[in-house]
Image 1 (spheres, rainbow, N blue to C red):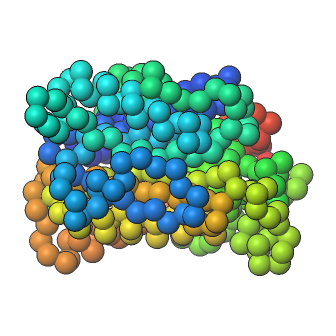
Image 2 (cartoon, rainbow, N blue to C red):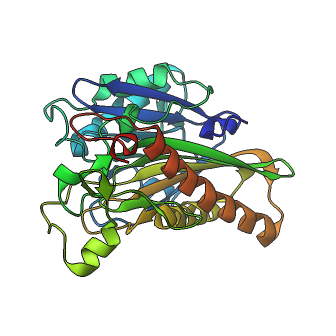
Length: 323
């Protein structure tokens, strides 16, 4: 176990990172036979191919997930993933064609670097081409390159966010892993004791975003409307599409434990789930509840890793340079 999403057999992760423009994208490639779910809780999402994951819809396969910076422009990175997978003969067979299923979500990072440079099809292809099962690089990499958190007092007081990953062994062969890109309006807290990890800064101190909002000591939309936390949770258990949807929904509990508050009007919080099926079917409600609990924990830990691995960039300090 390397404490990242690639602990799940068959999962590979690749990044395209542009440190000059402070943006990037991240591809999560799935093994054959995987299916997925999604849950969108933020009010400002940017997504692609989410409807296909609904339990009532026909296609059961999923081949990759693309997470990207660049706001809605970054959805083009999924084109590169589709082209890469098509070249490998991976996708749904439709007549004489192969159509890869690549759901995608984006975050807003246009304000920190060079906003005219965004991940595109070539960026997405590169991320897939260099995807591996090695331990996931974390912090200011891939889709997390331009991420920031703690923006209730405006972006000028934000703290650097990033990309984090974590995994947990539930025993009896069951594994759960998560990868989360943290670009929230809210502040980040320790999910165990609630202590503040990263929030709006004032010199060498930080405050709690939830207290800012309650007291009225905060910016109003549209001043804090460019945000979004996006991510993926994976299990090696064989789930149905309905169970995968439940897993994706439960992952938002991990967001709420670590990001306070999450799911705001200016957030587009979106979480995907993947079931690789490598372990086989689960044993009733007991195993499903264990997977849900593991999902919540790994998501919250991945969020902490995203903040702790982040580096100062684009004039936005990391927590290591604030406290």
